[in-house]
Image (cartoon, rainbow, N blue to C red; front, top):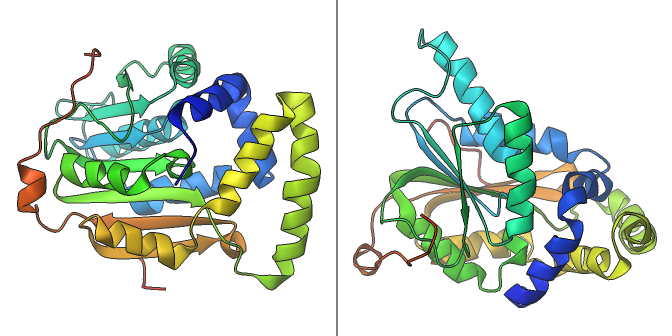
Length: 271
């Protein structure tokens, strides 16, 4: 489990304006390649789809989905511009993170993206709304991950796909010691320069406390998903988890969305 929502909000209020830089530091810039692989080879967005990116504050994944859909519209002979039926929603519990995303959207022309400030464990959407649910480097910060995954299951349509990109457990022995030195030596020092040491130490500790690949895959299965697979990246430093809502469970079908004031392709091989 993560820490309380208030503490997590405080951490991300501190790092919001430097969040993308922070990911560069945490991953030595490799997160850009991971995200490209994540969106192009796992999310695989198509025109007309409904996409929800949770804990997506700064909009990085949503913008990549947006760009790929526009490119594919052109390939399909559709006038590029997110045609009728396509919907991209970014949700985040932290308003400061969303503000950074909105600024970038305005600056770079992403005018068709929706922004919702909401707890990912209590989504305001109706059952079976989305074709795709993504979360990138955010699931480890949830206070109740199983609950968040049950919400993901609820808002996905039958046949909808869950894709999660997250830091994970190093599986390559040669990387283990260097990664420890980087995480516990350099990272807190970097925090003094870019934000504050406490926030960066939390981010490192949250990575180390996150379940290993197979344990988290089982948590996804327990939420009701089928075809659960994962792919370790860069020796296990990160991992992509993917799963499908094969059928609706009766107990989930009867749940109601939480209220808020704000308004397929080939699967990866089993590991």
